[in-house]
Length: 190
Image (cartoon, rainbow, N blue to C red; front, side, top):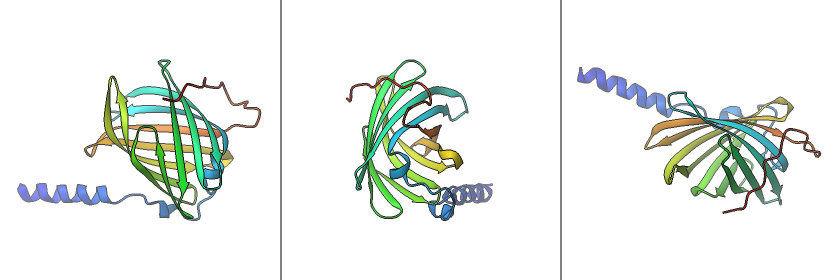
């Protein structure tokens, strides 16, 4: 019995260590360069599902991005389905052809990202607001650029290695007239 348990535990551990790597997407098109994709105005729609698959929250995000040749600054204004608003400002530096690092409100330390082909993989710890508290959680975040400029983002949220839920977002670049839906009101930075 103990031997069977050890075999199963080893298989689970090995399976958990395998998985996608950013390099798996080298050569995939369209190529995702976040400094190009997020420059200007972008709109996102997202959901958060808990670990049981129950939809817990829906939201929209208006994003204003600027690239100065070194740093991508993203001002993200969130509007949640319960009326709550939030602003998050990302500052992302491109380190080389494939690697990025970023900081944002709520990110603990530095987010680290790697991009190949049409994919970007982010990992970071985040102080997530839960009621009146903040939980330090880990984000394992993947973005995939699709045709027609649609960007799909899936992030697994964990604490102590236990999955709490998953965030799914769809991004679309806005035209210069901003004809792609309503605009989330700007909120003051905290």
